[in-house]
Image 1: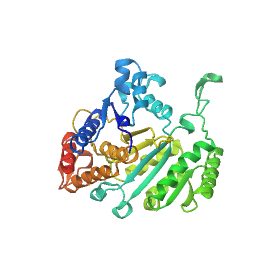
Image 2: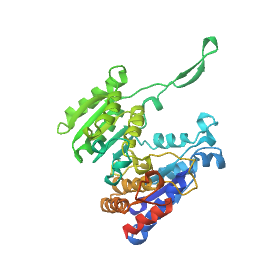
Image 3: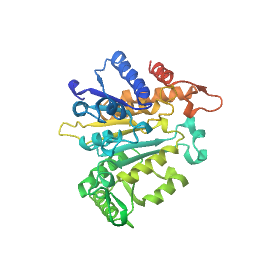
Image 4: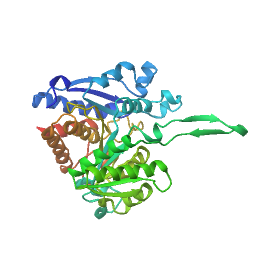
Length: 368
């Protein structure tokens, strides 16, 4: 078990609907403290646009150091049109990138699960998505989002050039591939590695290094390689062919968004960003829903908190060594959906529409 002094949870609600969904997570954390005698120590701080408004920066040094000291970071969402005009270094999203980079959160886990109760909410035919359960493992701290050189510079004829560099090293590739292989061993034991090795040298390196790691350490896991654009097509054609998909930062960003929409709603899906384990088996991690800040519905009680609540279930499982508690929280979500309770984004005929806070209360009632 994790040491008691390490059970610090930092809540970073952020912008838009972030504070509303994280408020429901906070209620559930408090329920576990009160009813299950757990020892979570909760702190809450500003991040993103709201931090810029108050402090002139998307994340202060004080908040960053609190993140360093926390076992679990629960993030809501950052950004919105209000801050579109800021210079690049001040944009709310820079806080998210800084946390990922400086905390060395290199592996992003994004499950795409089609809940049985919501098969009809998907835009694909029920027989295509029913029973869907994919885990996408996205490399998070390398690739084109962080590569150098980068920037915008003037060139001849009064034009400008935008530069971003796509670069990967052996160690960056193998550490995230190892996460994917280990996850596959606990699932259906299949990994699909995606890149663009036909046109990119970094993609060729990715393919070669994943294959070499497989041949050395994971021969028991079925490995296939697929070009990223073909993977995008296959996710629409026959998504249930996939178990674990591992891919780089750029393609992972796009493919995981595409896979999430197969399930019917971004409001349902969690994610985990994991660092490397130290010698004591402990690691830094950040958990967040995959949806954005949705400023158009902020403050209206319309946001779906399930993705944030399931993100906390992932935290219980991956960071806090509390699989049993994760199981009962996930079951509570399923039970509420079975009862026909829906937020607006997943509402359908014959169901009962409810608010953000009422959904959180309903899940707590199922926990009890």
